[in-house]
Image (spheres, rainbow, N blue to C red):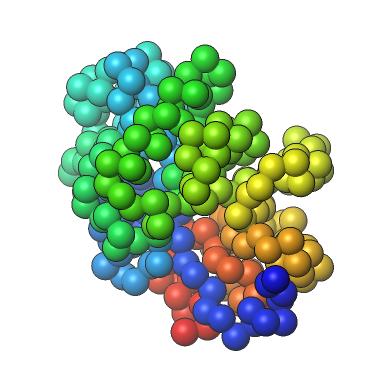
Amino acid sequence: MINSSEKKDVRMKILAHRGYSSIYPENTMLAFRKALEFGADGIEFDVQLTRDDQVVVIHDLTTERTTGVKGKVEEMTLSELQCLNACFRKQELYPRETIPTLDMVFAAFGTKLLMNVEIKTRNPKRVGKLVDRVIETILYYKNQESIIFSSFNFGDLVKARNVFPEIKTGLIADKGPSGWGARAFFKHSIHVDAIHPHLDLVTPKFVHNEHLCNREVRPWVVNSSYDMMRFQRMGVDAIITDDPILGLVYSGV
């Protein structure tokens, strides 16, 4: 059984949120390479299904914010998506990056990084296929020891466990009425390996209680030195941050 007092001297891991996204275009191979280069323990990224059932790495359900082109990810083919420039918001610094596939990320990083794969879909008819495709890709690359499978929706985690009982899972909890309070019951009804709470939900008591249940705590999105320092002192297992270099300063190395 884990408890906070046993974990206080353990280094807090740093997971780069959408890669090194404070500097580089989010959810791109460039952002992931830079996270690895600068010493992050892992990366967090979002996956969705294309119209032709390919797993792509992109956060928003639409493409406009990150590429400048209007479109819905689930209504576009992989070839259509990869014609877009994922550096749109930072194109003056980085001329072009494509929207990567999950296969590209796994092929590049294998077991070099922990990889937090977050399921992104609001289409209940598509989530089962998305989970299946992600699990298939994990099994192909045999990198399950490096994977954390996470979602806001506990049902996605149930589906993943049913397909692949050994997969490590993390339940994401936002603040507010639709967040942690609504999910508190469900986290006890299924086995999850970790809780990924909004940073405002994390207190020493919260961390202690989750560790008593043998669950790791990985708050998001932690970008201030103040929060990094206090979470390290609380004994959280990892933080998810846009700035992995700053995170490493306060990780307890």
